[in-house]
Image (cartoon, rainbow, N blue to C red; front, side):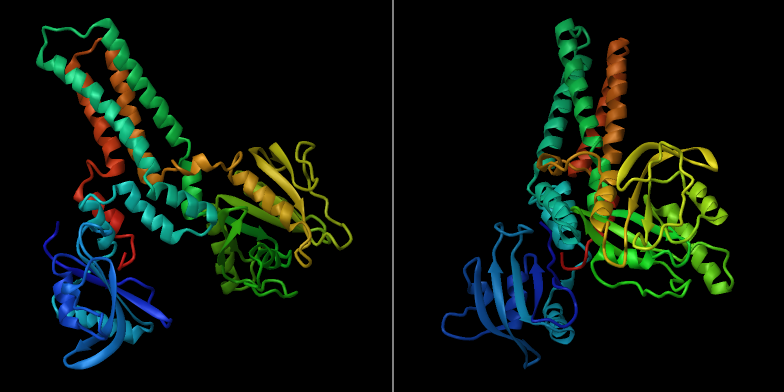
Length: 479
């Protein structure tokens, strides 16, 4: 339990119907008493109110009424932070919420740091570190799948499995250290085999979790998909169709898009960050040159490319250059304007079939015979929306292999979990090798302790202060 009381606005700043100011700490009720005047027969001072009740009144600052509010009282330990919590619901708007918060701060609370309410929930044992991270994932979820994954993690599904893994490894470590303390008693063959089997099961489970890392990162941060092609091939129109609304300016004038435009769309349950880029060509002016430079930079960072071609225009050497240049990326070749007469002939090998939505496992593009990547060719008309649904299917199939199952959402790890699991796996493999090679038990125990600590980092049982600061600093203030 911490000895100070924190406060912050828990709702987004701006005009709105309501705003919520949250207090947590040992003096939350006392601070609220100084700020809140109850109104009505049944309304009470916060310090006199039963837990989990709501009261009507007004916030008063220096003798002047600030706002009419509803005040919620939640007493420890049945709260999110396991401390006394008071939540004040006032009228929305930047000024009203700010003055209510200022009143609270003047009466003894301090302004909360980013993520400090959730950090207190973790420090007070209300949630573990994976659940704390799930709170952030829940806030930032952009699709129903990412929301479901965050809820599974918040419910402790991943924590249960990690804690079971850690308990198994601690039991193995206890056996090893017991034999170090009593060197006259050798580890019997049966016991040794049981320990090896336990550690091997641990490695297999870590491998299972590590296989979810890519999908977990996709759900959390999305996939970056760059839309590229020569000017006037319909890139901006395609972006608008994928988003379902007009985001980019569409014009028959070549070179309308001078800068990159980013927007996130829900594609078959996956968050995809589409980036519309400037048309690829030899630029004529400084501004367009900068736009094309940014296009190349975007392609470098993208995990997927939608390479757009205008079927009413013949294939050029410039097209061939860009087709070969970006062959190392996962990509979909989009043949746009299929409502117009066909003049485009792509130089594709027989394995790169131009049929709608057909996947080609190993498609080589002429001009770079060593470049191999999974490619699809999809015909669309960005003007009418024809072919957009098959294109969405192609995008989903390229970035997510197989079916999205409910049980997968329970254990999707993030990049921090991935790093800790890799270190734990490496140390566990070294432990197994040391056992099999009859190395001294001190060396076995050393690597096993490293593995136990790395697994403990995931749920926060061996987390450092720097790690906690890094995680919670990414939260918004008030959460």
